[in-house]
Each structure stands twice: as C-alpha cells, then as structure tokens.
Amino acid sequence: MPTPLVVSDIAKTFTMHLRGGVEIPVVEHVDFSLKAGQCAVLGGPSGAGKSSILKMLYGNYGVDRGQILVRHNGDYVDLATADPRMVIAIRRDTIGYVSQFLRVVPRVSALDVASEPLVQRGADPGEARARAAHLFSRLNLPETLWNLPPATFSGGEQQRVNIARGFITDHPVLLLDEPTASLDARNRQVVIDMIAEKKEAGVALLGIFHDQDVRDEVADAVIDVTRFAAKRAA
Ligand SMILES: Nc1ncnc2c1ncn2[C@@H]1O[C@H](COP(=O)(O)OP(=O)(O)OP(=O)(O)O)[C@@H](O)[C@H]1O
Image (cartoon, rainbow, N blue to C red; front, side):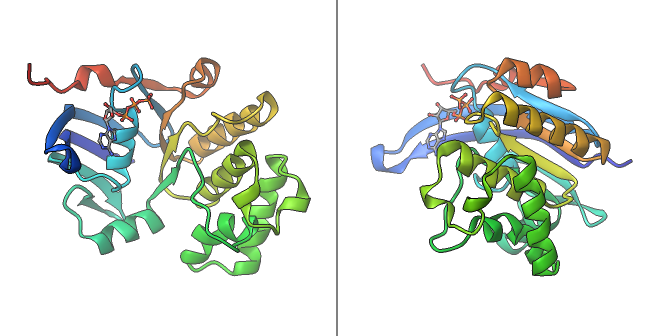
C-alpha cells in the first residue's frame, strides 16, 4: 500500500510581527512518514513543537521549507505549496483532524456539526446525521443535547462532538490533537477503541496524547520532536 503521508525537511520559525519582528525558531529538518493502519504519536516536552507540526500537516500553519507529500485521490500532492483550493480538497477527502477545542458555529446543532464533513463529501444529510447519532451514543453524549448547538456544552461534551466530527469520515489520514484531554475514563476507552478500528480500516493516524496510558495503548511508533529542535540564536 502506498505511503499516505511523507514529511521531508520541514522547518518552522514564527515571526512576531507585533513584537518588532521577534523570531521564534521552533523546528527544523522534520522528517518522518506515516504508515497505513498505524498510529504514530508525537512525543516531547511542552513547547517542543508537537501542535505546530500537526497544524502544518493540516495546512493551518505555513512551512518555511520542505515538503509535505500527501497521497490525495491517487496522486502525491505537496501540501506545503498547495493552493487554498487544494488544501480544502485535501481536508474534504484525505486528511481529517480532531482539534483540542471545538470551533462552535452559532445556531448549528451538535448533530449537524458532527455530520457536516460527510455532507460536504456528498452524503445524504439524513444518513450522515444517523451516523453522527450512532457515534454520539457510542461516546455517551446525552441524547437531550444532540439537537442543541454545542456552545454551552461542557469541555468534555464539546470534545466528544469534535471526536464524532473527526471520526465520521473514512479519510485515509487522521490527525488527533489531544482528543482525550477532557474525557473521563469510560469515554477515553471508547476513543481508544475507535482509534483501533481506524487502524484496522487502514487509516494512518498521527496524534498528540499527554495521557501516558492512552499513548501506550494506541502508539505503534513514537516520533520524538526534540530531535527536530531548531537552533535558537544566542
Ligand atoms: N501561532 C504562534 N505564534 C507564535 N509562536 C507560536 C505559535 N504557535 C506556537 N508557537 C510557539 O512554538 C513553540 C512550540 O509550540 P507548540 O504548541 O507547537 O508546542 P507543543 O509541543 O505542542 O507544546 P504543548 O505540549 O505544551 O502543547 C512554543 O515556543 C510556542 O510558543
């Protein structure tokens, strides 16, 4: 099976334009690839650049250098230089992302938030909502909340809506930014099971998990981000 994602020699420095152009070098020479059916985990201390790498792989942050080759609809595309329309297509069809916090849209119900990625791919809205409802019940989200906008939900409830939204599609690559941070033990286990099912289905996952137990359960490989630490000017 072709490699779904190959990162080569990427580097990132943040420039603080409102702080006199102060430069914060974060990572350089980042090299790794993801394997279908495996979950790799980004490791390293706070501030090492784990979230920044995940955001570069989703096209949220630009890269200063290097390539992010993604197998998208049968061809390799360099996400690092892709135009915005291609980035949107890659997100729709190839790379899914579960962020730590839900971006809440006013007046949109939890069911519509979670089913949207399937509807964007052309699924029947009723069927997409049924699939979202199935995920909500697996994740023990109370049914009374399903038709409400998630703005007032608790942190753990919002996180479960976010997880359902990220897991509802069959994207070949799935990025997970601390998906279990606000969950109790029972729901953490549900997410561990859902990750195992994605692996079984051949999905390549890359995640950040601060919870050591979850990490031990899901990780097939650990990518230590400290080895990509950018040299800072003295
Ligand atoms: N948008 C940004 N603008 C400026 N600096 C940033 C930005 N995002 C991250 N950084 C800086 O980049 C460095 C790496 O941050 P990042 O969030 O990637 O680390 P992390 O390994 O995910 O940390 P944690 O485990 O605490 O979440 C930090 O020094 C941070 O201050």
